[in-house]
Length: 133
Image (tube, rainbow, N blue to C red; front, side, top):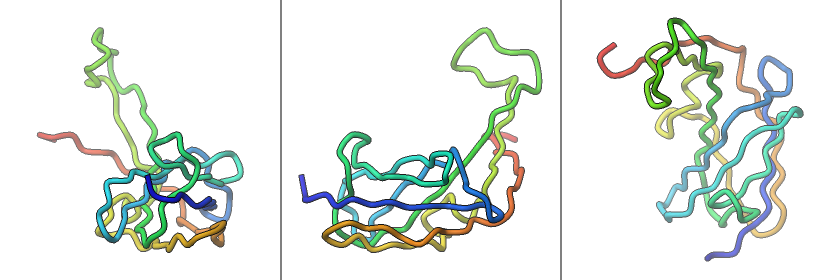
């Protein structure tokens, strides 16, 4: 395992802390190391590698940010694997949810990495389309 360096990111949405967002780091040079985390009530995410090792390997990354909500729109299914009665909505601009379009990039360097708060814009409500919709 490579050396891991502490990384703290903070996100706001429409000027307020963005709680409950999922953060993933996509390395500029593919490495196989999976790093990310989720934001707390203050909009802060302390990132981990493989979900359990504190810190992130050194390098340049694109930052992918997603936040979704599930809502019941029809009768619930009896199967835990069938989401037919649910709708899923993005709450953050989808430009941030794809490595090819996100505008957020960071460089992790040896030592502690704390970045300025990143603004994600106003909350949206865009339905996630399922195959065939």
